[in-house]
Amino acid sequence: MYGMSGYDIFLSSPTMHGDEMKFVREAFDTNWVAPLGRNVDEFEKELAAYIGVGFGAALCSGTAALHLAYKWVGLRPGELVFCSDLTFSATVNPISYEGGRQVFIDSERETWNMNPAALALAFEKYPKPRAVVLVHLYGTPARIDEIRAICDAHGVPLIEDAAESLGATYRGRQTGSFGDLSVVSFNGNKIITSSGGGMLLSDDERAIVKARFWATQSRDPAPHYQHSEIGYNYRMSNVVAGIGRGQLLHLDEHIAAKKRIYFTYQGAFADLPIQMNLYLAESEPNFWLSCLTINEGCPVTPQQVMTALAGIRAESRPIWKPMHCQPVFAGCEFVTVADKPVSEDIFARGLCLPSDIKMTDADLARVIETVRDVFYV
Ligand SMILES: *Cc1c(COP(=O)(O)O)cnc(C)c1O
Image (cartoon, rainbow, N blue to C red; front, side):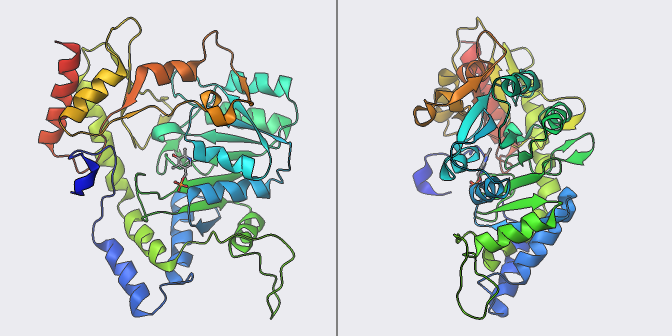
């Protein structure tokens, strides 16, 4: 264990298997550690095939992939993007890189994701956004059909932020295959990790070719260094892609382990005044993080549960603080159809439980006992 973290049981930390090293070694043996190389090309193909989309551009982060998605849809200064409100700031920061303005859309109760009714209301108020960005929070697919239909009715592109939901499905199709452009992340805490990285996915080959161009400093196809556009250094290295390829071989196994953790908690907490994060019958989450909300009226607070878990050196976290409550986005619009914003309510009553797949059964039992003790003192 890394001594400085203070935890023995983690929220979600990297789980390596050995296959990663084979691909990394190949990169070293052929002296293709960077830039690009075979691992990058193959990782793009393998991940796109897994998700069921035509093309992928391997990048240095999911945030970079989101940035290039906003550029591809042509986001210009002052234009609006309708965004999931309950998410990590990485979803929406790149909108500001391009001078765009976020309009935050409230959550619905079942999936904690964008409420289609609130999205429809946003289109009544602000008819011309440049794009909609939809997050599948904690690995739980959103109400994709409804949201896709609203976007299509208005002719507005959908960007799918599947950073947390790699491997989750909706009506049997992978998240990351529903957006005009989609983004996944291989950051250290995600369900698989390349140590850091992301991918932009699309069936539109032009978008992916352009993303690769922007990501390598927008070098024109000329024998000398010529640039007609502003570029970025956003590509994934061949070593990092090797780790990603090795991890992808174990994605399904990670999902199975996460699912087992979720259902173990659900069974063990059945009699507590809590609700585990729900999902739609037509979807199968990747169960990246097991979360719960404490029922209204129960005097136990999320902080009490988190403090108790820290007492056994187990890592838990608050729910993402809604974007419309962030100081940096204080000037942005927020659209809800509820009397009391649903995202704020989930934030106030919720927390993320230790969901690390390296937890032993004994670890899991200790976490469960610790949580139960907070409710039954
Ligand atoms: C992690 C994450 C990202 C960003 O991915 P990075 O690879 O860390 O840049 C974007 N959106 C969501 C919802 C995330 O959880």
